[in-house]
Length: 207
Image 1 (spheres, rainbow, N blue to C red):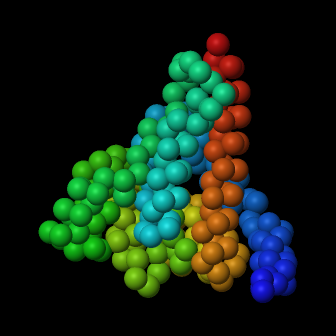
Image 2 (tube, rainbow, N blue to C red; image 1 turned 90 degrees about the horizontal axis):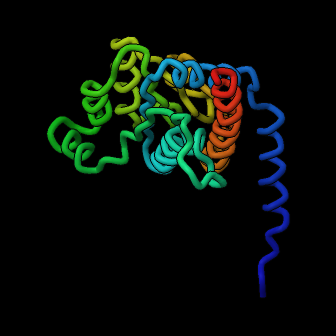
């Protein structure tokens, strides 16, 4: 006999509707504008996260580097460049070397210490906003601030350290890991889609 999951499904989707209603539109706007300025000024974007957020960080960097200027319908390479976006957690050899030699908390800050320049962007993704067991994210924020970088965050729950320290932090207003991780992808695609339009308009104005 099949279980009836209708009530659970309805409740989950109802909570998703509440997130859509309550999420801070102004913060999303600030986030988009910071990224757009970074693109115009040819700055580097470094994305990072732990666990499920690491996969979102990888996806975000990929879309920033490619999709914003060369979407899936384009067969030829566009003259417009994407972002110089790199996902820090996509290099397992480098990441695990730092973990092995200097500990988990220094893993991301050690890498960023080599690559980060002034006014670059660190884009951190964390369900709990770098609080509790995500010491490597907090140290990444600290080294970013010390080097004059801007910090962007995607978080959930109360926003944690990211909400406190970032130049812009979009918080999914729900105390739920599944909702937060899922909605981070919704927000990511919203941001990338808007950047596609902004970059296209900007590039056409330059012709």
